[in-house]
Length: 271
Length: 241
Image 1 (cartoon, rainbow over the protein chains, first blue to last red):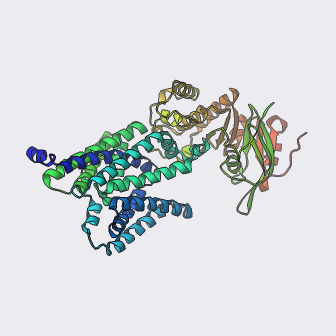
Image 2: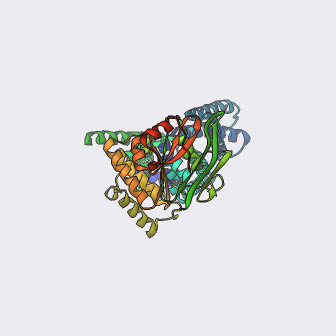
Image 3: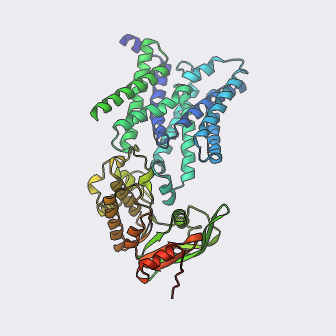
């Protein structure tokens, strides 16, 4: 087994894929935390399904699919904001409408793809071998930008996530920070969709945060724990999938769900 | 005495429904103003207008001499947060209070920030609860933390909108004592409360909302309780000298 792992990780693409996965596992819970706390987890799903439509559009137009995913994902969160204003008392409708539009558009556009049809499939569930050097650099660049912006605005993001009204009265630019948060979510989803898979990314946004919430002792501690959990899920899932020849994204998600269930059971016993 | 808040001929409508009609009053530095009136009388609307959260066209609100429409008012604000609070939110009392700082430093809190944190926690009697998760505390303790958050910004005016909603009777008493103590230290207090007798007892001025969005300002010792009740019910008007 060790020999298999050593052999696999002697390949350049495997090392790059692991490094990208490690960075994605920092940004997903970093953005997932305020999204979960604001009870907007569905936005991850809406953005990821729209990212798939972007992949299809990219393949049709001959543009890099990751760039297509970023563009459509950003358009999706802008659409969510517009729908939230129109249905201010039923804001959950917004994410569902945009997600439905994303699925519909993906289904229609996929019928026009003449070459590289397997790319759609690889974006749905993630693919390591299909990732190009350009996509790895793009994903790394976007991830570093998300980490930097999240760090610079971490106090504002906390204040607005905890109590939007008080933040508004304190003079914080609530609308701008909320928009920034949506934008970061879109970028995170699109950046991660190549490796983790568009259908899997929202679980990486939510499951590490859910696990961390069970044992977190403060907001800061919960954010740090959620990043640690995401790293454990991804790296262990990546190794297990390599050894057992499974799909990495699915393995990562299933390990995450298993750890969450174990923590829930242990916490239930402690009570 | 210096007037800290001046409201002149303020009228406000939600769509076509008038809520406030030609309301005028002023608050001096160090006052404890209680705003009372029946449900839907316009108390919370007035608070939102003072805080600059609602736009208005008719009348004027000057806080620290500046129009609240053009300059964001620097006030400490405490809402009914306890009643609608997400107790699963994993934030400590310390984190919540520090979020009230007006301009926190980017990388780490300064020694001055930490000194103010310690001072505010001590002031509300929550020093030993700084590292506790706020969702695990009682309603009274949570509201003390929110009062500390409102104080840490260093404003000399504290606005409280129904701060005792969702809090048990014993804690209501101690919260009201805390608010009176803060007022005695020189902070101007403006407060609404569903529990009118408790507010009437604590405040030294009362803005009484009558029917049809009219409001009258009275000093507590100027009128008897019976006269205040009549004013509250809209059966009489109070005339200042």
